[in-house]
Amino acid sequence: MYQKRHNGQLSIEDFHLPFGGTLDTDNRWVIFSSLMPWEELEESYAPQFNPTTGAPAKPVRLAFGALFIKQRLGLTDEETVEQIRENAYMQYFLGYAGYSSKAPFDPSMMVHFRKRFSEEELTRINELIAERGKAMLMEVVASQQDDDDTNDPSAYADNQLSLDDFVKPADWPEGKNWGTLSIDASCTPADITYPTDLKLLNEARESTERIIDDLCEQNSDLRKHSPRYDRGKARANFLRVAKQKKPRRRKIKATIRRQLDYLQRNLDAIDALIHSGAMLSGLKTHWWQKLLVISELHRQQSILLYSKTRSMPDRIVNLVQRHVRPMVRGKTRAAVEFGAKISVSVRNGFAFLHRISWDPYNESEDLIPQAMKYKQEHGCYPERICADRIYINTKNRNFCTRNDIRLSGKRLGRPPKNPEISAAHKQQLSADQRRRNEVEGCFGSGKRKYSLDLIMARLSKGAENSISMAFVVMCAEKIRRLLRLFFITIFAWLCTWKWPGSLWMGLRNIWQLETNQSLATG
Image (cartoon, rainbow, N blue to C red; front, side, top):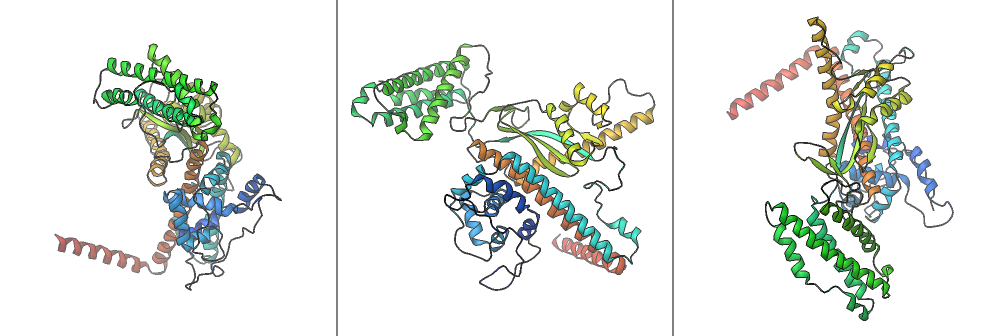
């Protein structure tokens, strides 16, 4: 059951603090609370529950806010609950009427929260946050211009933070392309060990031994179907090769063949136990799901052992996270990564997640859909698309030519004989490549600050939610930095206009102080 609640923003004065005082309006969680589209979130959240029966569900602001806090700070589920319990600003962000020292929910509820927000829903929320942030920036610009009508408008225009890179001008010609679209793809590694065929088979053998022991405990007469081999000897056979630094390929294949034999005997024993009356329903869900994965792993490894190829469609690399697939990236640090492949677009400074796939694909297929998405949002195609070499194929070139879009990359044909034109083309290509760095920076900040370098969620839905939530957090942080930068720019302009010498004197004093300290240290 879900009970709709008032999601209107609380005022700072109404938030009750038992130790007195009021909250700071410039705190980041207070700013984030004004950015979140709480009403739109509840419209998609409430229909998931029965309105009349069942226990009351947690409100959408608490569920979404907890996921936001976890992704922003890179916390575990347990630590997220503790941080919320101890922090009054976080409780204000979650819609509390006052500070409470009690835990808001059990940490296991975070698993259910991740299932309630789909990838498409979070992408829509990301776009709403970006639009609301642009509106806030424009309101600040309008209010500042109204306050400073008597000032010199040309001087203010030279010092203000330009919004032309983020918001399409109102007087822009109809049908003319506007803006920049940067696109690229990356991989978000999952929290698994580096998989090898031998390691996977050994883990599968040990898991089937555990399943056989659990099935035999259901009836003492079933123990006669247990396979008669020495488990210690089977593990020693695995460790003999696994501990070698560079074992020969022949030894690896022989050990794989031996482990496959052990695994086949275990699978046959499980079939015999089931025919003799053992119940798979007596096992925990985790184990019988793992048994299905082990059966598929045995089939794949048997084919790879006796075939000349080393590739396999839908290859299993982990018994628990069976949705994870190898992604051949060709990077210097890791040629192959294991996780979800994501396609990202940066539209005029804001990053948006376009696609999450657990199977490898060619990212050049995403250029046209992302350009169409850009047109749906802004009413026109982008003026230029900054992308990697893999995106510059014949199909994408023809699409960009038809729609008057400049696709970054080298031009076809011979270079022009005029050196001035050739230099202009090189300068333009260099500028486009520099602009493409913003999407690379998006991946870097996402992996360094927002936990995209290692996805800890084990379920596929939970992992997709963590990836999508990271881009929601990045968008909110981008708007907060822009607001901060805008206020700093306005303050600097006011200082230079009202007290032209004071700003220079202050900077000179700071420079002299730092110089004197460096000389004293030397």
